[in-house]
Length: 461
Image (cartoon, rainbow, N blue to C red; front, top):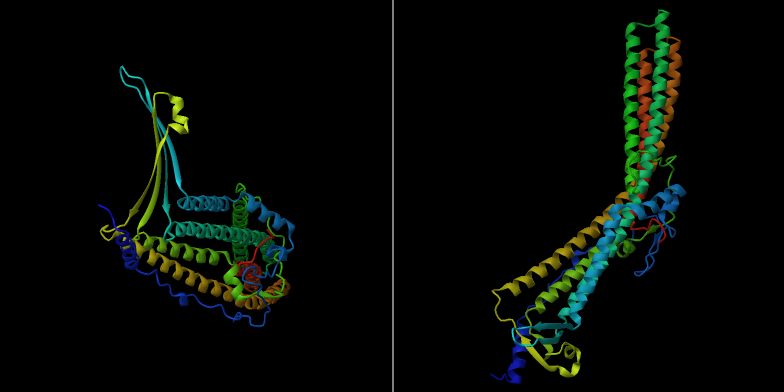
């Protein structure tokens, strides 16, 4: 049956009209970037541009800590961390998938040769050269190629986010190991202090100035301090192993970490909220996945439209094998075909719905990631001020507690304070000193997480 050109045009037009519109994505669900940060409105904003967000640490925020050994540890982690290498492999796989998605834009060409050898007959050789190409009338193959490119962009952003998270993890482990080392020295000092109390109490007992209860209480204090020392040794070793694993080393527990818990520098400026949207890798990845999902939804809708395929075939048959490679022996033909899906049990419509909902899901994920990013920055900026005050308060408490131990020890030797007074003062001192170490460590941790929340680069790439 011959198909009238008017009927053909009508078929295509009706098919196009039957396809429902794309997913209606409400971009209003994505929150707008505020003009500034509510927690620290007095800070100067470094906005930059949409294409190149300005960095508050052009050389990388690791430089703020002024520790070359820390920087070397971060670079070692970049080179040897297995998780980062895994993400890099995923990025390479996404690049390969992008190249695969582009293949539909080009013709496919195949060449085959076969030979038939039957009894009492000479061998006959057959050759076939074939090519086929789907004419991308509706841009379906282009949508798939663009979706592959969007997913490649998402994978690249995932790698950047993993790199930033690794640098933050190494820096945090570096100072965790430093804090554990300082706490270990504090535990040793406390044990020496408790042993000194036991020595004084034994002398007073021999002189008839202290009771056996005082001796036993002083020994209890020594034993508790020994327990604290062992726990501190274990914590220091665990922190060292955690740092070693992040840098790709065997967890032998030999890593040293920071020598001191330094005070982070004051922030000269802060990345603007709008720059966080354009510069934070996880948000870039989430936005790229919205693009990819939307393009795949477009492809699913176009699957219901007619498909035009062009085919070229050239065949040759000869009793001579060499003739198979002679273009003059081939008989060729060019054909074209139009395929219009009519009934697939609702599968095409269902797939279009599914891909549309996937696109909406990706958009909601992006909107939620944006809100979470803003929350993380606000939390860290708020903590900058409170932790600074906490560090000052705990430092004062630790200093006064140490002075109280010295005074109580003197009073105990002179018989003006009891063993209970001395033990309580020592217990208060170790608690205050431990708290002072923890707040200093927490302030460093908060600054690291602030840079991570802002999407700042740890080192210049």
